[in-house]
Length: 112
Image: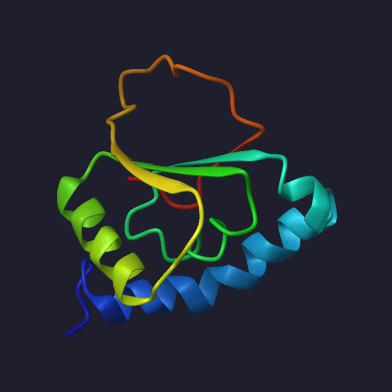
């Protein structure tokens, strides 16, 4: 079933936005440079388009305000055996937020 928390929706995100994100980052950093960078995704949802990043970057942090989406994303990352240094974090940035550290890359694609 196609719902915003379904595995099918996760796969569609992964396929539809993968090339955009990959090409954007490839234009900015080579593989060796990416391994030294930290990456923050704001409003990640199921984090399908970010699913290839954990093994490309030093650290990947995936933020979203919807706990159900994050719960589903964790399940799908396990299901797809995604490896690397990543973590999911529930955080609503609607009224501003102070991050506890700096990130080399801050990305958002379609936050709600």
